[in-house]
Length: 161
Image (cartoon, rainbow, N blue to C red; front, side, top):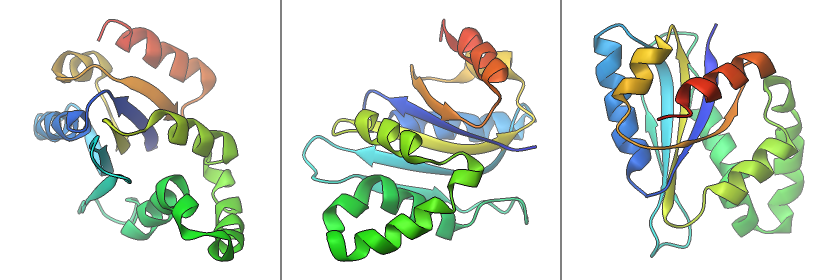
């Protein structure tokens, strides 16, 4: 089963450095990165830049359309005006089933701001202790579709990261 996790970093390049480290861990079979996307928001920009990992993980991987819709809701919808807002609202309702609701959107919007970055990661088969040791950046776990118990354990493991 794949896990969708969102990690926030305190600088615009932290998410990319961490994704690079995770891809290295994948080569060592310590995690499976099924798909990922990086949001980077330099201080001198009005809106963030998004980059998608074009994974060849197969049918289970999220498509670029999903990332585009999600990032549109999170970062670009406020800039588009009311006319498109109704359509975006209808589309966002369908994301609730996968744990992407208004609370998630508000949480990410409040934390991923100018001068930060975020890694949106769809992964499985992680050897958590080894992943923790290898990540080069400090981060904040914004969201995960793990159970509350699993997420608490993950936060505990990464508390010293």
